[in-house]
Amino acid sequence: MSEVRTRFAPSPTGNLHVGGAHTALFAWLFARHEGGKFVLRIEDTDEVRSTDESLAAIYDGLRWLGIDWDEGPDVGGPYAPYIQSERLEIYEDYINRLIESGRAYRCFCTPEELEERREIQRARGMPPRYDRACVDLPEDQLQTWLAEGKPYCVRFRVEDEGTTVINDVVRGEVSFDNEVLGDFVIRKTSGYPTYHMAVVVDDYLMKISHVIRAEEHLSNTPSHVQLMEALGFDVPVFAHLPLIMGTDRTKLSKRHGAVNLMDYKEQGFLPEAMRNFLALIGWSPGTDEEILDLQQLIDRFTLEGVSKSPGIFDLEKATWLNGEYLKRADAEYLTELLLPMLREHDLIEDDLSPERRRWLVDVVDLMKERTRLLKDFVTWGRYFFTEDFPYDNRARKKWLSREEVPERLDMLAERIEALETWDVDSIEQAIRGLADELDVSASKIIHPCRAACTGQTIGPSLFHLMELLPQDSVVRRLRRAAELGRAGEMEPVGSVDEGPDD
Ligand code: GLU
Image 1 (tube, rainbow, N blue to C red):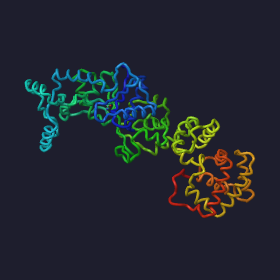
Image 2: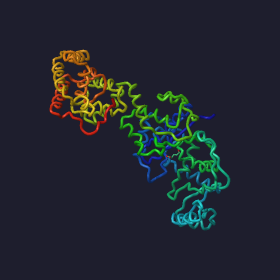
Image 3: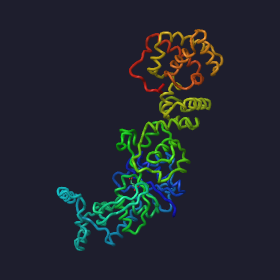
Image 4: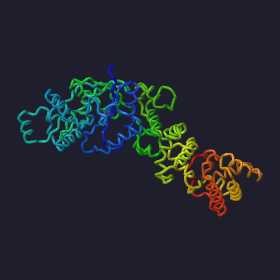
């Protein structure tokens, strides 16, 4: 077989959506699995809606996911340019060839005339299709209108009998009745080609072997195949990816979570977790493996593993997967990702000394086992960075509002203050020593101490987290909680706060 070449062909009319990222990932994984090439082509034939910001957002989103391209607008390649608005002459040439061969014709019908005729068709219960009013215009009429500069578009004259059969790797053989196609526009009144025209020409010229795209384009495919045949192009292999739905089996929308890929970055998803998650939507490695690193995804990816039925976007699963990645991630790496978030929340200084940075890596190392999203470091882990943290309702209810607690916290504060070394062992001894002296189980000191120091009932190892807090800050935290408890200000308020479950 000749070289595998796939492409991602986004229209730069908004952010990179989860669906677009999913399509890009599948086309990319397939190319990488096959040792082929992956092309990024920008389809900006919608002159009105295409923007440079959107183009930048597409680059950012793909790069964040770790998708690279062998050819594209910024890196060039043998079939440049890779932006459709820079290829207009190429399309014009093919459009003219179709006109000359009689497979395309100029149509001077105005939008109002078209609408009027569609109304009539609808009223008669017929599917609204172009009625070919301009298909065989007398030559003199055509020349007069052209000379007058009357606006026109160019339509492809479809084969309207029989069927067009698509062999789709995912969907199998799909047959379309040609009758429903209608003579579609290939060149707009503005002179721009339509998506149908540009996509067909570019897939051919860029030697795309496999067109891997979203299912919504399946219904366009018979039109594309007819165009390819009329132009004498080979038909590529098609693979239409399944729709993506929410867990309630409706089309993915904002109701199910963010649709803009980069919102997941904001929320603290790791790119490798998101990539793993997206890969498992509508594709299976054929085993029950769920955590697959980049190389495993590339090794296992085949189009045969793509499912016909809709893929489910399950945010719970994405979050779980992200937690698994956080657990396994290197603390240095996570620290780098976390720093901008901490700065945004004013939780860390801009200029980190080497010691402070080492401290932060230790905090991350301790916390990462228990987080699901990077932002959990900022919310659940807030107490590492400031004494201004909330006491959640579980901490208030179970410990901080109890009558015997303030006195114990004060006693502990005294012992902590007196410690000459500040490490896990000395902290543990102080806590266990107090418990022995009061003749209570260690947990009766440990739990209120955690609640006082962190505002929560669970978290990483208490002695280790205390070691990472300044000794004087721990003393202040214990005394403050005691004082608030005594003043009756540790009663639970409102509903149970968002926090780690215990
Ligand atoms: N520009 C089209 C889109 O963004 C690409 C469709 C295709 O891959 O053929 O939906």
